[in-house]
Image (cartoon, rainbow, N blue to C red; front, side):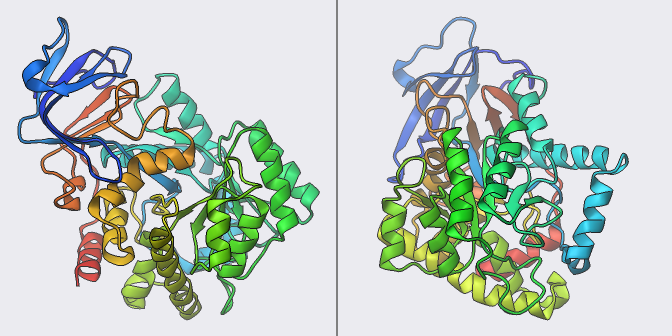
Amino acid sequence: MSSLSPSLREPFAITHATVVIGDANGTTLHDTTVIVGGDGRIERIAPSIATPIPDGYRMLDATGKTVTPGLINAHVHLFSEGRPLNPKMATPRGQRITATIMHSPVGKPYLKARAKASVMTLLRSGVTTIRTLGDVGYEAVELRDRIADGHMVGPRILAAGPLLAIPEGHGAPLIALTGETPEDMARNTRENLAHGVNAIKIAATGGVTDAQRLGEAGSPQMTVDQMRAICDVAHEAGVIVAAHAQSPEGVKRALLAGVDTIEHGSALDDAMIELFRHNPHSLRGWSALIPTMSAGLPMTELGQDVTGITDIQLANARTVVAGMLAGAEDAHDAGLRVGVGTDTAMTFVTQYNTWRELDLLVKRAGFTAAEALHAATLGDAEILGVAGETGSVEAGKAADLLVLDANPLLDLRALKQPALVIADGRPLWHPQVKRFDDIDALLDRAYDE
């Protein structure tokens, strides 16, 4: 394939490709040409034998290769690479110290550089749209705007800024704004919106990473009224709301409040399933599940000598992960909307391994490869409200595309190293990422057994 400029858009055609369009049925087009205009939009998809290449369009011969939509990761953090987090830094005191450093004149430039590096790693690994769900400040908003303005090539970003929590609740104070009353929650939501966020995150329950006592992970931390105040303000602005929820009670409260996505999740009963299907207080009348199995399984399937987590974290993780796996399977069996997010930056959740979440949906939740790829492309796009722009190989949409050496419907590991990533019509040739071979080897052994 001849090369294009990595920064400027120019019209091109990918010819003689196998094209997986991104639907749940795994619709595949053989010997197909995808024509992309100079505006970065897909102009036409048609059989190569009957499709002439317009004058002035560069031809990229993709014989033997597969084209898919770019992946979407609906749950990322940008502050770390995915190496094990220090348990001492997860305590309230540790978070306060870290927050002070990150907001200092020394910390702010580091944080911006770390966030940019994370975004570029995600992109080079094949992720062309991300949603951040818990930022130290508004560094993701700044990156989103730089990318949208054409100052840098990057993925489409939905940026949440700091999540919303109770004092010393999950994520506080490092990546959270805190409050106690519904009025506090509404005010903090407005503050995030005033900073330009286009996503909102709630800590509905305690979490594994910063839990300091047995049972804290999954224990409800917000009332329905507190979360409803957040949802009302966000929805008035047309912004969807995610809720970290790791227990049946936490999930139920968040759904009753009107959240649009449940992050992590739990086993689902009939009443919860019905709320996912028909949620009168959500923005679009339904809610979706983002299981994030990549974030939970390493803590329970790798030894503490490897992960570095505490006994309390491990005990909490076992309970939460069991519920997370059950919830993903329950949601799939019920035909609910299930998306893909990995919780990047958490222990052993690298910025480049989004493909593993698809693999886990197949191995642990009963998905087919086509359903998993759909969840990470058009499914996520519909959940995030960007399906008009991206998520499938379809005329009129942005050219967010991957060119792969093999068909991921036959082996999802084909997604591990794209030959070419195209973001909004801009190509990244031979994209490479910094990999952690020790982490990858451990995860390979844990998940392939």
